[in-house]
Length: 289
Ligand code: C2E
Ligand code: MG
Ligand code: MG
Ligand code: MG
Image 1 (cartoon, rainbow, N blue to C red):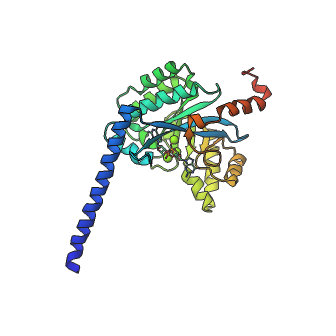
Image 2 (spheres, rainbow, N blue to C red):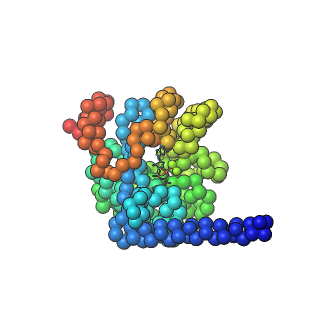
Image 3 (cartoon, rainbow, N blue to C red):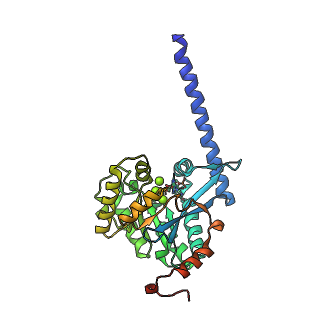
């Protein structure tokens, strides 16, 4: 029995490796297929104002399906796309599609796009973004780009130059998944961020009853405001979280409580337009007439 157990482990390990490789190859094939046949979809999730719940913008989230139509999570296919050299063409598609989409929405609504660190490598990101903005005919400020901490760990002078140039187009830069990485806080003063997105794990911890999280969130909001940045909290699913965030002055809220990611056709933009007209702040004027 003892003798065979090592053998069993090996067989099990090989089977597991095979399965893993098989899944990887399937996903690669789906990625290639989607690139060749316009097979990616963008879903949009609202970011609402922390003070009055009005929709301020939408985050674009990419979707890919397997051959049976079942969604493959981005957390699974994005790393494969990065490793296999597909992420740049995917990322360019997302920028072009999201800017084209935001051009259809009311002027005051922005769209937010996730960037992979790989998109900063060849230095053509600036042109891709500038071209997309002018092709869509939108103001740069209606596009927000979300980056992750790992971007700031390497080639930081070059990354800094690119972020500044992107901001020169009027584009806003957000630090995504804030509070989960492993780099120091020093990037907060070295890089030009307009916004911090507090990672959803903070809200999940709060929901589990972790009492210190609330204080940490308050502190992050206050720190961001002192540094001239806006704050979004992600992963908000409960009313008590909304109340807490409003009370501590968090600028924007994102999460299933206000809406899940959906295709653009399912967004109630018309009712949103109507809502904004009816609730428009008299001080901000009546641009829509
Ligand atoms: P992220 O940018 O932090 O996006 C937030 C993720 O949390 C999304 O998952 C969203 O659907 C989910 N989410 C939002 N609100 C809630 C909530 O209240 N509860 C829970 N449980 N989840 C919530 P999704 O769409 O699966 O995307 C996962 C990650 O994949 C994103 O995290 C982002 O890092 C990456 N990603 C998505 N789209 C793109 C893209 O176009 N390009 C790149 N490079 N990465 C992308
Ligand atoms: Mg994001
Ligand atoms: Mg995030
Ligand atoms: Mg995330």
